[in-house]
Structures are given as C-alpha cells and as structure tokens.
Amino acid sequence: MRSIDHFNLRSFDLNLLVAFDALMSERSVTRAAQRLKLGQPAMSHALSTLRLLLDDEILVRVGTTMNPTAKAIALAPRLRELLLQIQSTLTEGKPFDPQSEARIVRIGFSSELEILLLPRLTACLQVHAPGVSLLTRSVARSDTHRMLDSGELDLAIGCFDYGLERHCGEPLFEQSLACCFNPALVQPSLPLSAAEYIAHPHALMTLKDDIQGCLSEALARAGETLNVVLAASDFLTVLATAAEAPVIATLPARMAARYAPRFGLTVTEIPLDLRLPSVALVWSMQTDRDPALAWLRARVVPLLQAASASEIARPVSGDRDGAVLNV
Image (cartoon, rainbow, N blue to C red; front, side, top):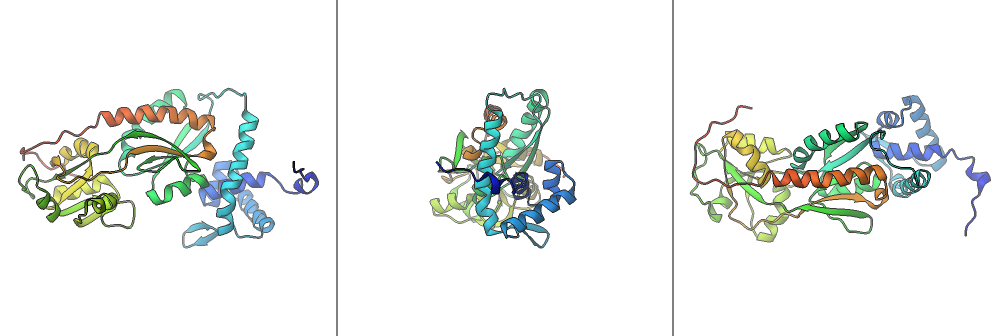
C-alpha cells in the first residue's frame, strides 16, 4: 500500500480541488463563486493559485466563453471522482433527508422531454424537497457523456446511450413520430403516401449542425432524404412555422398530439419506418451513489413515464377545420 506524503500534501489547500470542480462545472468564475457561496475575488484568487500550482491556465477565454485546457479536461473526471468518494465517506451512515437538502441539480434534455417532465417534477420537489432547484438545458447527443463526466450535468434525459464503462442508465419509453401540417396550406391525400411525404418541404427539430436534425440517422437507415427547409431547436418554432408556411412538420408523436391542434394543424402518421432510439435516464458512474441524485432519479422515472403515457398520439384523418393559433 502506498503511503501518504502528509508533509507535502498539507502544503496544498485541498479546498482548491473543490474550487477546481466548480470551475470546471460552471466554466465561469462568477457562477463558480455563486455555487460555492464565495465572493468573486476569492474565486479569482483560487483560479490564480490553481494555475500556479498546476502550471496550466485551467480555463482560457475564447470570445465570451471560458474553455478548459486539455490538462484540465483530463484532470476533471479523476478529481471529481475523488471528491465524490470523500463526500460519500463523510456522509456514510447519515440518513438522507430530502426536506433539508439544499442544492442545484443540472439536467440535460433532448428535444421536447423538458416540457413533459419539469411541471410535474417541480411540483413534486416543492412538496418533498423544497431546497432542491433545477437548472436545465438542451444538449446534443454527442456532448452528453462529456458533460456528465465533467459535472456540467447531473442527469441527462433523452435518446442517449448508456451501459458503457462510465455511465449508468434506465430506459423510460419508446419514441414514435408523427407529422402535421396546416390543411389550408398543404392538402395531401390521406393517408399520406411515402412519395408525397418525401417530396414535400419539411420543418424539423435539431440540436446539432445537421439540417435533417434528430431524424438524420433514422432517414439514413431508411435510405431516404427529406427536402428540409427549416431545422430549428425548439418544437414550438417548428409548429408555428407549419401553421404559417406550406411545410410538413415531423415531431415526436406525443408533442404533435398535444400541441399541433393548438396551431390548427392536422396530425397524421408518417408513411416511413423511421425509428428513434428509446428515451433513457442517464447519469455518470461517478454520481451513482449520490443519495440526493438517487432519490431524484427514483422520482423522475415514474413521473416521466406517466407524462409520456398521457401524451400518446391519436392520428387524425380528414378533418381539415380549425383556426390557426396566433403566437
């Protein structure tokens, strides 16, 4: 067993490791200071000290953002794991009390899932864990695992992979798709044919630099390409566009069923076999034993499954009436 060099280790303020983790999570001196309830000068001093001790800039300003260096990225998951082990050791045997827990939980979502879960989860937390606040954001599938490892996210909910070396997960439900259109502007034959669907201009959702958005992989598997005239990050933008322009909008069926009628849109099935990955709740192995996050995960799963079950799409056929919602 390796021994600890207490003499040299005591010269390093271990609070700097906490500061380093906060800086890597927030990518901002101001937000890291707020997270640790410190003044900004104190956090700036901690960053300066870390730069000196580690002989590295840690965070480098690029435009309006602070980007981590390669060394900081390499250190972040290892140091975070150490801090989590220390936290787990110190709190071992101490019962978890959600009523007294005070923390911010960061959750990343893909597409429309945020609006399905957050109203119910917020209501639940206000009753059972009023000191827990939620900070949410949309994340691309390609960034999710990195953000979980760095602590930028505590949980991720969406079409994300898990079961890998560093990530845990729980499947939630399968996703299906539907398309919708303004019957005053688009008048396809119903049921919609595959040829008509492919040929028509489309509006889709995307969280990445891909005009075919979240459908790109599904379309590739089907060997098809759509004529996409708009790819937007928000499903309400896609629906509002379909209300005003002669396009077909393709969305997750739950969102189409709930919101498309409010825009005066007709909802129907997609005439292609486009399959999306199942929706899952994913977290880093580093936080697997965090009692607060374990408690929260146990609430998220039934709440999101219940919300999903209540939003199952009911495709409609030839009813072309309905006023367009003014937005």
